[in-house]
Each structure stands twice: as C-alpha cells, then as structure tokens.
Length: 152
Ligand SMILES: Cc1cc2nc3c(=O)[nH]c(=O)nc-3n(C[C@H](O)[C@H](O)[C@H](O)COP(=O)(O)O)c2cc1C
Image (cartoon, rainbow, N blue to C red):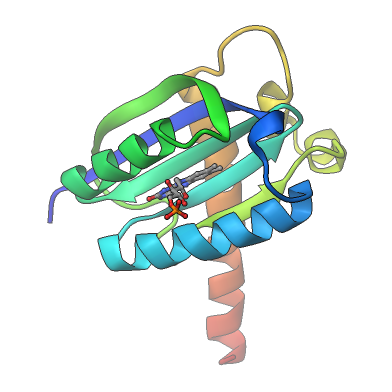
C-alpha cells in the first residue's frame, strides 16, 4: 500500500476556540480520531505554546484530504508545511492521533530533540520535525516491546 506523510505547523486562532483549551483539545481529539479511523490515517499532534505541530500518515489521498480539513479549520491559521512526501513506513502505526502538550517546557528540558519545536521565530525544519516525532515514535515502540515482553 502506498503511504504518504504530511507534517505542518500552525498557529492557534484563540478567538475561534469555542471551549476552554483543555476541553477544546479533548473534543477535537475525539472527533479527529473518529475521522482518522475511517480514513486509515494515523499520526501525532503536539501543542507548543502558540502552535500545533501535526504529522499525518496514510494513503496519499486520505492524508491530503485530512490536510485540506485542517487548512479549512477556523481554529488554525498561518499553516506552514514542513514535510510532504511518500513514506516507507508509519512513525505512529497504532495512533489515530497521539497527543502531547509540550507547553510547560518540561519534556523539552529533558529531551533536547524537542527544543527546536518550542516557539522560535524561524521555521521548524524537516530534520527537526523528524527528530522530535521520532522521539515519541521510539517511546511508543519501547512501550510496545515492554508490553510484549510482559505479555500485557
Ligand atoms: C489541531 C487540529 C487538528 C486536526 N487534525 C485533523 C486530522 O487529523 N484529521 C482530520 O480529518 N481533520 C483534522 N482537523 C480538522 C477538524 O477536526 C475538522 O475539520 C473538523 O472537526 C470538522 O468537523 P466538524 O465541524 O464536523 O466537527 C484538525 C483540526 C485541528 C484544529
């Protein structure tokens, strides 16, 4: 099956949120996981201060449809594409949408690969995005191996 990966960074349009941020995130994750399950799309979403950074993986048409939905979502603006390319494998094969809130800076203080994601005026590069998402993908993979070993 042909696979495609898209990754973008986008600013949050605070005035367009209908609920307090934690509730808005919960509702949106519920909704997008439902949509992604039907579309066979997997990925990860990181909240970073004024931005979200998201990676979407799946069949090319489905991923591009998801990106189109994101681009039309009034809660986001100033979308910057970071990765748009065919992929050999999924970084997040079992995650309908993995989520981490990095706004408190704790994870970034412990893991240097996450620091380039924290608000800096320049763009996030493809390499920086791969290192950061790779960090979480590896964390999930380790969890799976441990679960397999413990048979849980
Ligand atoms: C932070 C964020 C992430 C999103 N991620 C996805 C996604 O992974 N897949 C998708 O199809 N839509 C995604 N969207 C788009 C919206 O969830 C979608 O357009 C919206 O919920 C549309 O539906 P509704 O008005 O029917 O709820 C995202 C939107 C936001 C704000």
